[in-house]
Image (cartoon, rainbow, N blue to C red):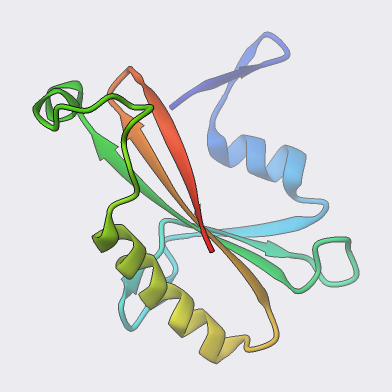
Length: 121
């Protein structure tokens, strides 16, 4: 999904590496016993986000799927199966880095209509 920055097109990888790399590293589809996470940000050692990790799961629904669900983007709620999926990744991450502060997010994308971001506490 292209973004526009300073009048030119940028992709998420470029945005992450150009603008966040001073403080955060990131990985895509990291493997765990329970599956692969979509995106993770890792706070760099000796930087302000050291010891912090963000695990992000993306879910995509087409416009037709959203319509079949008979809900709006604003009324869409976090699905339990997505919470469970993310919990499995976090369990593996906690085993590897028990001292890390871990933040969990699910981002739902709805065709060309919009998105919703949920933080799981």
